[in-house]
Length: 123
Image (cartoon, rainbow, N blue to C red; front, side):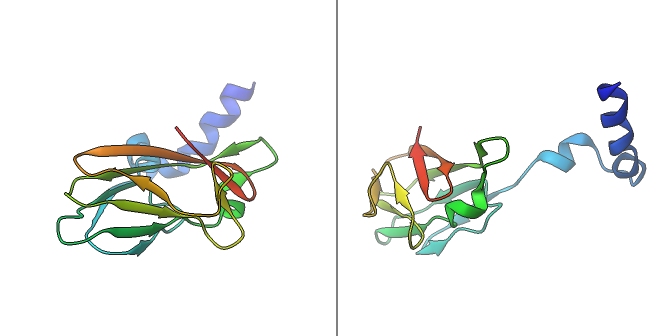
């Protein structure tokens, strides 16, 4: 019964000509300067060839759902020669720290997931 109901919920989307991929895919974004992430910036590629860049994460309270204890996952990749600094939003922490988390140069990447309403974990 649950499967039948969930299929019915998707009929309006599919009838508009959208595929399931289009419904769930979130595009990557390339930035080359300091940037504050929006809630649905799933993948961020940071070109740090000209300078170190600071990426501010969205508030964990918006990225985490306490009802089903799950948080959004953000993928951040450094494709440049300088460092990327991950900065938590005001009142949040990354791995228990309110200071910056560093992503090294040279195609290093990290996954960051909201783990509570005020914190992120690094995968």
